Length: 470
Ligand code: NBP
Image (cartoon, rainbow, N blue to C red; front, side):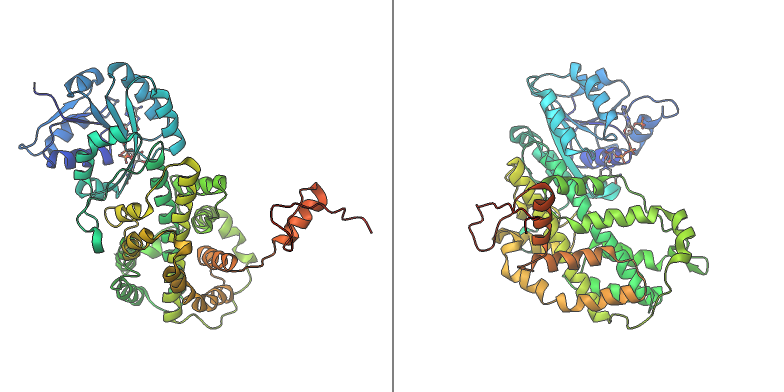
């Protein structure tokens, strides 16, 4: 039998759609899924979906699957991240040879990716951690793909991966694929994780916009307003687009949204991003706020019981539509600023030499956080860090005035707006040359002799005071 050029291991939702996409690109493909009880038909059922013009071989036995692949073997593993992946690695490794390339396309933690890369050192087998965004639809029709690991291994799979990616959007970057080499080690999975962190805050901001608008408009009017926003490049995004469709979805005589329990789930990547930010000492307050908002929502039963203790809303002025629109744009700029700065911190820490403009370019299409703002950032980031970009900072500064009235309305009407607050407080904190940390430093020195620096001396000098001395 003629050998296959590429293998896909794991025919779950993502694996199947990526496999069909690879076959569409004209590659000879082999696919594998384990034979679990009750799931015996996964491979035959999948093969029925393959167009007769395409060459796809299906396997339920690992040795036969591996044997079918031409060397060096290139295998995309699409299974649940964690233990399942380690089990597969243990099973597959004895069947492989030096030069073979394994691509983990799942949502693995970047530390796990680095651990597996270290485990494979000396075997000659390469492990690429490939972040893939875009869900089922992206996998089938064009995803955003973030591969990290050894450059030489990436170069061998680049044509296939790039053929699976959506074309980039916006300005100078149109038509290049939303896939390019990210960096060494676990950098591909790291940036995919932060992509999800940014996504968490973007989703939560839209939920907060909904909460604010619901006090003054019906769903059709909100959808109509958001549709107008979506026509402007600065607001346009996939998440805004789907939110408009969600608002319009009917259920009987009402709206489906009114029947959905306000208890958010999560698969952990937002918490991972927040933890990474904590470890790197970077204040990614918006994604962390969004994670906490989901956690608070998940205490649904307690919230029902505690509801009676909440103070009655005081009413008062609601933000104008213009104030809300400017605040939304303000908060999204801060969210992206935080996300890219967090990636910059990690890049410096791990010496990944990440290209942030290129990353923004990859995120202009195929992924969940694709947006007009991302297209702008793919150009802006070429000029250097956002924290040094005067036009970017000026455009946030111009919107700042709109935010306090929104936050005040939220307080008066008792609306839970943690991520708008996080955005504003980040901006205020970062643009306050003199803050309150002198008190913290004095307290630390008081109880722990941790020392402090002085504003009137070189910052290289440290001081300790005996605070009880009269
Ligand atoms: P699914 O849950 O649909 O599929 C998981 C696959 O892993 C199945 O083929 C399953 O086989 C296989 N598997 C498991 Br679970 N344990 C295994 C084991 N010990 N040995 C062999 N195979 C095993 O997941 P999915 O939605 O396709 O996602 C796959 C990966 O892609 C995940 O890491 C996910 O986080 C990531 N991802 C998902 C999305 C998305 O939108 N869904 C987007 C981006 C990334 P079985 O069928 O026999 O149980």
